[in-house]
Length: 277
Image 1 (cartoon, rainbow, N blue to C red):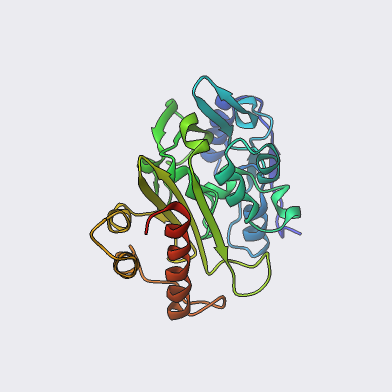
Image 2: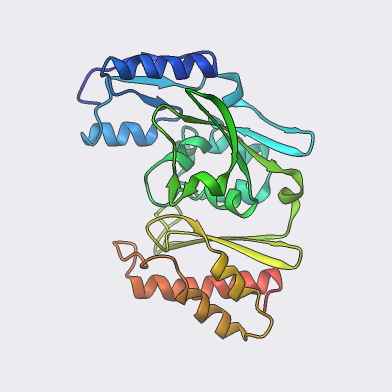
């Protein structure tokens, strides 16, 4: 149970949601946007947040689409990970989504919620980083479409009152050769030691990671090393690990040293799978 009262709103359009959020904000109600709500509910139960109003986005048509439009795959932010995986329009994204939590949780977790959350795994974003996807964002000044790399830097950087409406990915990426692995210490639903997503495009391997550092990321410096034909496999992996963008996580799932060991093994698997030896 959430230990405080709040007002609930369910707007039917993008601009109604934006205007409602601004109205509630001026009233000092500390509103939050809501889609699946799993992270909001968890944090509210722990008194980490205390919104006095929630704005549910699930009735907004643009947030619920999942279709190919011309040469783009368009996915609304309120599409759940279960629905996305079942439809399987982008196999790497489906596989990454299936690794997030258990089936019951995935029935509620939305792709927009996973990407926008603060938990440091957010594995659904990895294929989107590899595919140079674009995102459609709504705010007071209307809608804007930007490359995901412009707004996702360790986390999704949105201004106050903005929310994610859709993710757009060029069709050519959905059928490229890929590799995905989620390595856990125990079981099939625990948090990962390492999640690695990789894709091969134009004879170059792209890689993105979760669980390794305190945020999901794709690294151009690591990709440059992994695609260097002058390096041996061991040199590629050792140098790639040296170029991690932050300290390796050490937590209950595994120490930093063990996580680095698992990362090196997983990188070897990815390169072997995609012909990057």
